[in-house]
Image 1 (tube, one colour):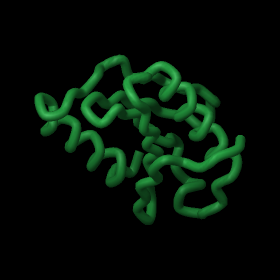
Image 2 (image 1 turned 180 degrees about the vertical axis):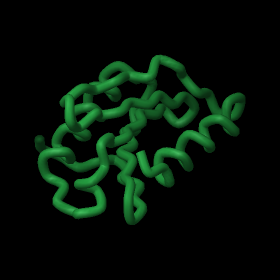
Image 3 (image 1 turned 180 degrees about the horizontal axis):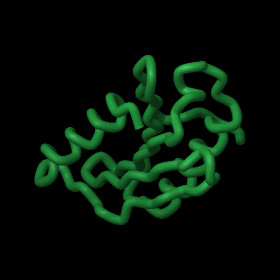
Image 4 (image 1 turned 60 degrees about the vertical axis):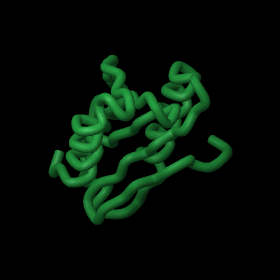
Length: 104
């Protein structure tokens, strides 16, 4: 993996990778999934190592989609629901907060 993450939101126990794309959620999701896999193999922070799942999002700025890397099974789940700003701002905000504050 070469390059840099667009955004990495992190608390002491959780992290969320956000990939920003211009109107291309499909390629953005693929790139975000690769970044989650790379973080799974690279991240050595003890609190993050304990996370059974890593969360990711891809966004065009107005449309958001989420994915989860299930670390034990090495499985990426693509959440098919799309969240639109400003229409879905409340559920989108709740998801972002939950991803960063959950104990998985």
